[in-house]
Image 1 (tube, one colour):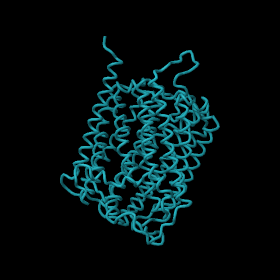
Image 2 (cartoon, helix red, strand yellow):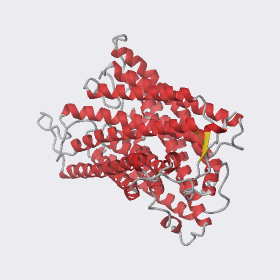
Image 3 (tube, one colour):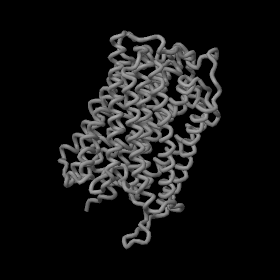
Image 4 (spheres, one colour):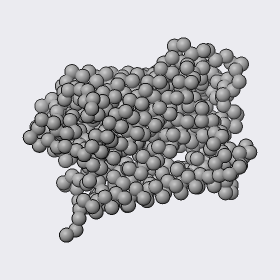
Length: 563
């Protein structure tokens, strides 16, 4: 049974916070932000090197920076923050004590040690194998060991999350079904267990290979199993960020889904099919059968796309319904125009939702078509797609949630609030520009991984049109803008922890009781036709998707002319 002495009640929200869980939330979130800074600096160096007019780094350091950027951003920053989210959703939103806090600290130490171990051997130049680490490229054994330790720590947190759900159910800390936000986190956890297991299946034999205990690793086998880890990591992110979108809508507006059962079904569709999209990294590889490729990236992916389309309507729709209930009923979009755009919690969340859909989602669907995939495979279009998912989708959602959590967990006012307001816009629009112009350059053939896109000074050098250099230059400028946004977020976050004004318990509540109730209970906002504006927005999205999809087929037809 829970001990009341282990809890505190947040005066802003009325939520009961389990103190051992709060300490782990803080520790994981702080380390996450540190690795965002490290990985972001490496990413900026990569972007300035890919910008032909600057071309910052020599070849050796470019690949070191590229490897570190991939590991620290795609894995370390995001998973550390997701661990904090799992602790928050399973304890705070369920009013529950945490299962096995001591094992939580063991998991934290494993993750920190693993992340540091991998970074050290990347920086000493012995493990410049990039994020994918494909054989026959061989890294130091400590690189693989670091990733394995990190994965084991994350896996322990997943089981702690499940154990906490059991405790909450047994101790009846909530009524009915678990809240939708917690359900989304549960789906993310289940996908995470699959993802981490896939990583272990391939990284353990690869570690033995690097130690000389295994004679060789088949590259095609490695790619097949590794992408069940590498791509499915993004499916954890998707489920987590969508849960955050629902949560922020509830906390800021008291928004509940138009149909919570349908929203849960959308999450469940992710569990059935989302990670099957991993095969779109293998569409241009030999070895896979045609039926494998078509089923995984077409028929099965349609199930996941259906889930995404449900979320694309119900998240803004729930906010619209809540706003209209409060009297913002003039026209289709008064509810959106009068939303709190100056609040970085809302601006970060809504930019994340919109940019992820238009950039990451649509490009991901297009890449999953075998014929189209062949014209963009291994071009810089692929990192463009990544920035449309991990950067403007997941990272921006995490930034938005941070600005809500800072007063709640640390009881401090956000440091430099004006800078915080700008940070989400700078990061979102900057990284969105990186995604757009990298994808455009990828369509024109710019290589994905090469240090010098023009191969200058080589016998097989190639001179692109002026348009390509323009695209890469604008992408470089956008990367600088996005990096400034990330730096502003880090300054505001660290500044809040060190210098933020203490929030008195008598201060006005930052969240209404209606918002807390919407985030922590099961139920629909209401019935009826309540979101016409959101329906129009989804219609615009569908038109854009169809036009872009068929434009790619037109482009493919112009390359593969029939004689």
